[in-house]
Length: 269
Image 1 (tube, rainbow, N blue to C red):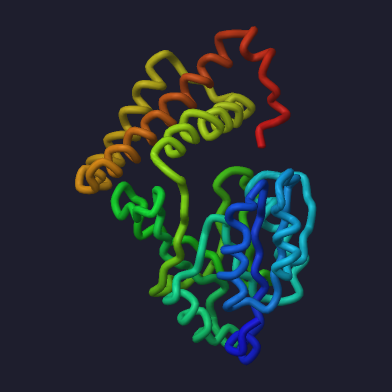
Image 2 (tube, one colour; image 1 turned 60 degrees about the vertical axis):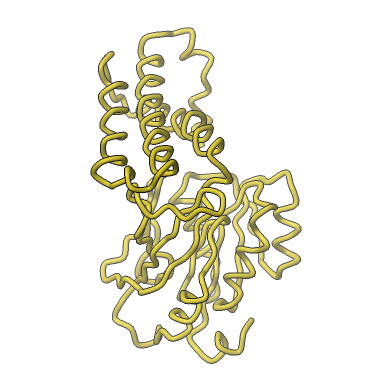
């Protein structure tokens, strides 16, 4: 706990985790610079995540995964303080963000949430194109007035009077290009296909190609991935792979009862 934090409105830092031993210490160290309380909501880690979190002074809540929004609302519900700063385990506050958050007058503000720009990385490379920057995300919010949506995928804080801060946080999204493609082609697309299938969405043989092509064009041309060299091309291709596969997998679920029967639709998350 820093002296700057104790002289201002107290903040609870919250992180959800699953096997984040490689990230959790740096994440909590970042949060501790502006937070007076740390909460980690873990969904069944089998590595040292929980032990490392406790050693860093965090209160660990063990909660089977409920989906993105419901899981991210567990920590704020257990928080001692009104204001919550929620980070993913692979996110870090920049020096600029620390200074800006410390300078906020949270006790008198009219805003119920504050958004930070997110710098998304592949390895140590900051990708500024493809819609990856500025990627504003509300991370600091008044839990008595707002919280994460109930969406079980890609949830966000539903603030009614948010403010965009002139500060960044860092998001170490992918360790390398291989991870960029394996995540897109693996669990990301499979999870999305399962969700669409459970919702009853119907597609045809053209859908995978159309959605894959649209995703590539949007990232590479409209969001100027073409100006970001190999990383811009790679992000655009991975987006296309993800879009193509999630619709191809959905089509497979619709058409092939053997594939469908072998898939556990109760394990979407």
